[in-house]
Length: 514
Image (tube, rainbow, N blue to C red; front, side, top):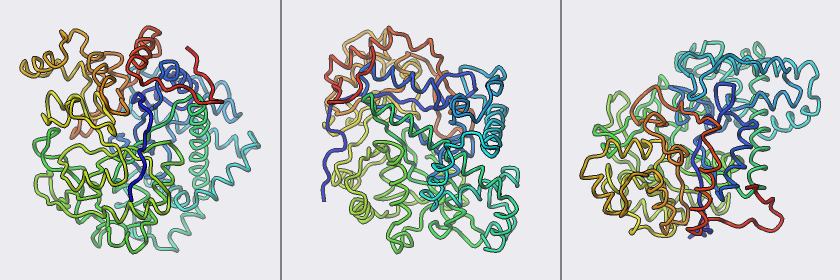
């Protein structure tokens, strides 16, 4: 079975996680500034907004170590939108002086503030405010019951244990004894319902934003990590899907061998799947996970796609990823089931790292575009497949991703030889290096070109989103609204037009301003 191409029109987009949006609430959200951002994208002829995983974050605030593979991040809920719905008072929008250039995760003040607002919103809803939400909230709870009930109970118990991982809960709750779960559900009924309500609010605000974006010709690319966090509702509620020992600890964990990101490999620590059990269950969990993801976005970027063909298995007690082995994944069998149940899959395959011919074969079988990172063409990976003259059309080219330094930061730390090669390749003096690489991406044959906003703004290492292998201090960057000037947007729009990536609105589509 060969699927049709995922992206058919030559187009362009920008990578920006919602937490990076500006506002006064300490962390970007789905409120007015998100709509301003969509308008800016549309006005600059951008067809795509790519985000990182939208799930509630756990360890080190990383969206790739989430508390659920299905739930939305409540910290993205907009207080302004809650006020508009009658769930908050105007005085609730008066906030402390939070930093404007970064999310202050370390102090806990931002998340504490958002939690207090969400508690107020729940209390006001219970008092009868926003009665028009009642029916849709009830429908949401029924429609998403397969994951929502477990997640709400998991979060409630986790709160009762002051946030510690479920592997340190008392045995009856850790092993999910039915009588213990029933007691907890009765004892904490209000808290369970509140967590469901938060998920409903996220769903409501996200779908409103998605509808607005799609109507203006901006489609959404989401991000689906192949693995899930040990400390998650998914592993707690379905331990049979993972390779765990009798104490519910991972027998083996995920990572990758040494590569251009790390000389000792990357030890992610996620529990590995029990693929044989999932196969016996007809991969139902994966079907629901993909279905849920596509309910939120138009296209999914699947992180570490090669892990479906073969994954790096590391003993659970290992301190680095150097000691491991390649193990065969479900491959074609899984994707045949997914396409049979869900139809053609709009997936971008993250095919970085060690990519073998069988991984390429799996990707091309279903028409999934792969990824190319321009920075890797001139430093780091030093693989010819990253040079633009080697691209195939069914490719998504990035100047960099959330795991890369910004172009400016990368170039400043590159060797003289690397800078010289880049200068020769571009035929430019590199004085405007961020835009030189954006131009190179936009001019390539790749069907889609994407750049992080940091590169559009020509920012340095201080704006880096993540450093692989660094356990804390990242995922914090935010931009200020005044940075997104008309000059910058007009430059991006003109470049997009010049290289044939400005997709015209379809009949009936709202024309973007600008």
